[in-house]
Amino acid sequence: MKKILFKSGSTMMGGLEKVQIEYINFLVKQEKYQIKIVIENDNGRDNSLEKYINSNVTYLKDYNYILEIKNLRENRKKSLWSRIKYNLAITKEKKYADNKFLQIYKEYKPDIVIDFDSSLTKIIDKLNSSKNLVWIHSSIKNWKKKKSKIDRFVDRISKYSKIICICKEMKEDLINLKNELKKKVDFLYNPIDFDRIKKLSNEDFSEEDKKLLKDKFLLSIARLDCVPKDFETLFKAYEIAKKNGYDGKLYIIGDGPDKDKVEKLKEANLYKEDILLLGRKENPYNWLKKADKLILSSRYEGFAIVLLEGLCLGKNVIASDCKTGPNEILANNRGLLFKVGDYSTLAKYIISEKNKEELEFSLEEFERNRIFEKFLEILED
Image 1: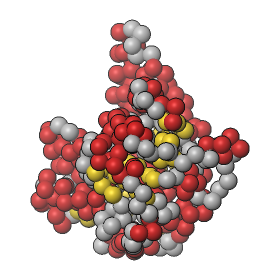
Image 2: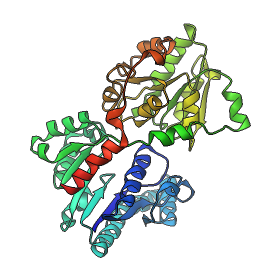
Image 3: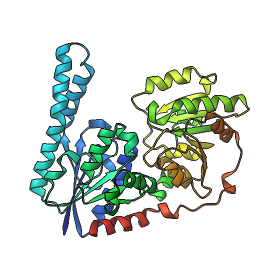
Image 4: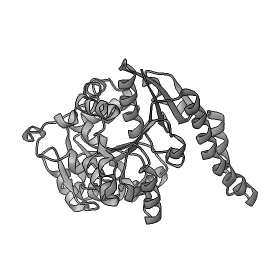
């Protein structure tokens, strides 16, 4: 029986975190593998997805350690000494996690290591007794930005046995960065449990939420992070659409570091009373099922898994033609694309009454069983 050591960052609510559950639970079911799950950060009550993992989880940094770092971060501007203490703690933090992982690696002696959040790149040279796979979840150019950081990261991932990108475009971009990786790099679309999404979409709402469902509404499900998610374009398009007769509201599901900035953008909008920030929802699918249209306005993405979730529920889906994901997901008449930042076109699409029934498409290439079959082939290669 082959031993797999699976490493990722957290069990908080997020796209990557939801996908890792699919892979973990699939591996747990395979009789020929023994799997150990290592997660870097224990976020206490925010470990909202841990309960869906069908295996025990080992955290590298316990909740008290995370809390200590958080407190130092919040107080770092109070004095020079506070800033020094925070910088020292951050320097030690990564080494602390790496050393704990290496100890587990030495004791567990895995045949295969899956670095699902590409956080082991600095210690990859020390993982010399296993086959090592690394996942890349976003465009490296958008992620690392500076050429020196891009080159350094590409050199590090070159030392893995296999590099897995989450869409074709991402794979092609990586090969363009370093052609020698052609034989090492492959892609796997994120596996999605369409049946589970459909089941969750039928869950009932609270009495308070039911009041919001009486209105027609657009829906955006996104982390509140203004640079990648481009809420400015979304709000401008919504304002234009409303001026031109659109009679629905705009609901946003998500939380994140730029919550205050998004609130300010909302307050500056002529139709601020019709824009609602609903916060984080453990089950966004019942909201998605009721939405008029799903909108993604990002400047860049990893795979934009939310678009597939919308298609699964038969929604009219509109997305920016950003790197990476939307173009592949919405190809073959599956949805509408607009240029990044083109709020005028987005507004036209919002107003458009083209019915989903008029769009004929297949999601066969995104079926999880097909993806898992390819995943097994990669593991056994």
